[in-house]
Image (cartoon, rainbow, N blue to C red; front, top):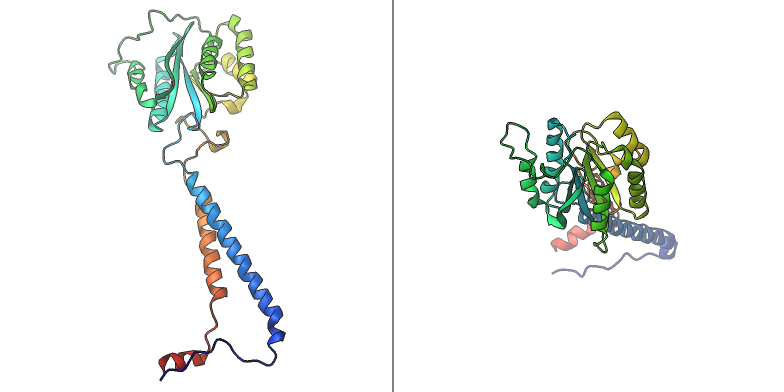
Length: 279
């Protein structure tokens, strides 16, 4: 025969326990709120992770690559230009492409799948690796006008609506002396219009590097080596790569909070409870 389990413990001074009961209730309520907050933060952090490698243009922006193909580009610099395009392809992004020397040419409009850059990679192959003749050699000259290429990229991006805009300039930064005033004007317009400009320098001369650093600041230059955005260079809303430290920290705190909640909210087991259950 089993005895009915009591719902509580009779006490003549139950009212004396009300402060402790209130304190326990508030502790439970605080822990529940903390667990829910950590759960929401963990979900938001997980949703912000990008499953693809971060390329040299932020995935959240409508981007245009401006590629310098002037005669001043040395053969050793083509590999770094190829690397920038390969990074875009690995990130499976969508970009436009402008190639230029003295005159710019829109090769791809914004929104073109980065996989379409494969023929351009072949045209930028190092010497001795089966590089075909450049299709632009007959029209491009040695005189470089970077401002005209950036102006064309700016006009192309003006057609895009409702997205952040970005330009990646891949160049040795050597422009004609008479182009410097126009270049300064164009860079000022890009800044006013909120168009992000980042630069992949191809063995730039000291004069070209000094000019662009003076107009843009050193933070506009991507680091040497593999071409990708550092976390500090990503605009707000861009995706990130690497170890998701924030997600790991939030997940650990959530587990700790749940363990503490379980520890503090477990029902008190009295010695008599086990005997009643056996009966």
